[in-house]
Image (cartoon, rainbow, N blue to C red; front, side, top):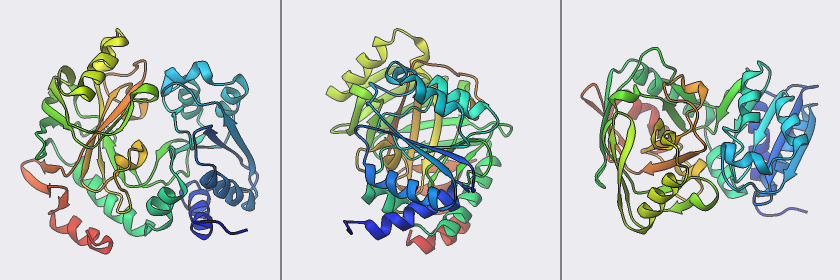
Length: 348
């Protein structure tokens, strides 16, 4: 029987399995989801992987209480074993296993190709994957990443009050999330470019005015009012705002761990199908968004911070970005001539 998005899901499932993850016959494919995940996208991906001749396991488990190491106490031992021993792992969890110890083991084993899609619904995976011109998106992101890699100084402002600047290390990787998971390592939903700035140079003010996601009780979703962070040398030294800001302040304090105040990475969102929905994986890819990760710093960033008890992400909408004094985006819209030409295919 056909249901809503049946045909779009078939297309999305094929793109994920074939184009994004390069699944081959005989490979083991693990797809994880928890009890709060939308099953429809998982089934579509599993069907496509099976049709390619892969050996597919869908692991449905109870929902953890948070992200990363905070999720480990609710992870069954067979699940941990499967994560460490698969060729391809596609994570569709509402509470990410990303940044947990099994995840660290998987991306370090020289075998596993990991793709996190988060808790995308059938509508979201249609907008953010099935309806995207993948080759055009990759061309746009490749050029954007090249510009970042050749930039020394970055300044970001928003009308909500963000005024932050930092230096970029040319020897650190720029993680260009074009979803080409054809080799071992960590890969993320298309439409984002992220990196770890030189931590000691990050100074100023960050104002989250889109959404905030820290897993469990800290999954705040779309914000009712801005959360203002004062940053000195890559660390949060003060938090200002209303009820949600006070919650975040108390939540960070509850870990009693200074590593929770570190800025783990910055990411720029440019998925033409993404909307602000309160689902982090989509929110941080809204066109023209700058997003900051707090706490755990993934090893793929090759930064100076590293481990923390968990990880959180906050978004700053409609960002104005300058690279080495040159305006690249203004209020979230591309103004750089070559990037603007490449983005025109999306109507941006």
